[in-house]
Image 1 (cartoon, one colour):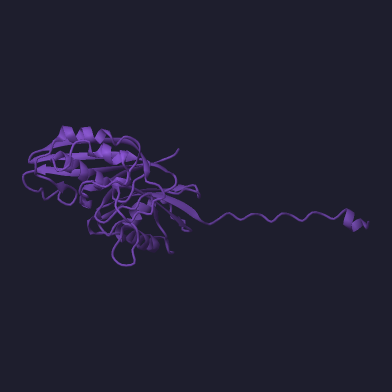
Image 2: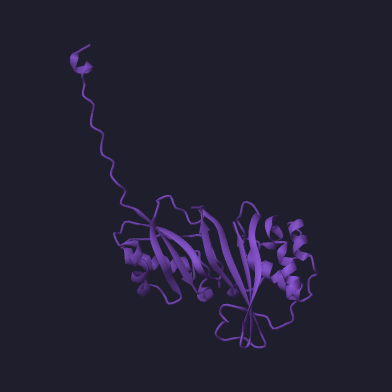
Length: 270
């Protein structure tokens, strides 16, 4: 064998270039009253749409935002979590203040940080916490009307608490979801479900808090509407238990309006 083949020098390995892309995780608050939900729509104003427009201007390139949850029309958020990829060198911690003048007053970026490139706000979330607020006064309260469901009629609070207890655990919520859901399974694990009463000078706010590993389309609003219908005597005691034991059987209560619902927190695996 010729010497030049036996002693052929190895070619130097090409140095791998670092990716210029950074992934940003941000927490977002919004008043959902004037939005057609979070997810971008062909027509109409959405939270995702205004975020992408504002962040695109700030970062100097088109931006695609992904949210941890797709809140419906009129639903609010205090703890929505989004992610985006950017080539900009703007420090992540400066984004909330820098984006403030580019966003409408009903959308706020609370915080932002650099995260691992593989971070996914949907797949990496282990639970979401929602709160539904009901205003219990003789007349509506103008300062909370955008964020509460006014219900002045009689409700049996203790009975509603008893019904709520059946929600905790792993159940099939097929009877407590609206049509149009693309979810592959209707089984969800509810870690916590409880009621809190907050007295005020002109009435009370009843808060329904629920934490689960995921939620179906309009699931929380249907749960709340069903609990109200049991509490006012329109549906019998034991309705929640029956709906969970007989998934898909029908017979849920009304769907409470979106204005009372708020995405409070998204928890991720550590």
